Length: 142
Image (cartoon, rainbow, N blue to C red; front, side):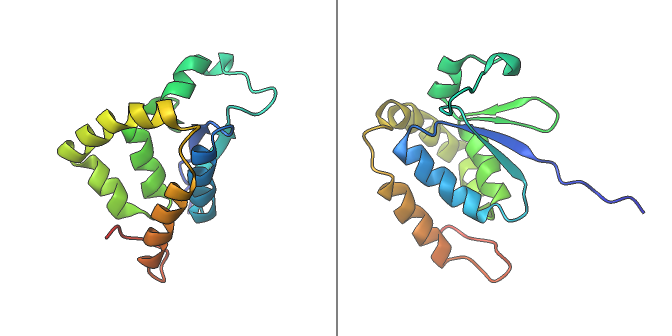
């Protein structure tokens, strides 16, 4: 019998952004299955050149690299991040066409203002979600 290796997605995030750090810290904490790997694009020495994606693009939208090397950008990146960390309901909500459209329209504003927005907003959101987590680690959005 061959062991199945989990497919790991790589999340590229802006560690210089307090809002982003807060969200990623919560996702790291919930990444118990090890389905996500996190790379801070603001870390000294980070070079995006081998990725084939420029730093402006990485800073303008969330990027997640699939195990096959393809990219998820923007709302689809968040869908896979939330699904991989047990927030299945949030991921399903973002997969709804109307919700994805709303999120896609709001996201550029959030990105432009991310250095001014307090990460307490994200912490509050995840605290609310943690209250709806079951013993098996799955969490639902109320």
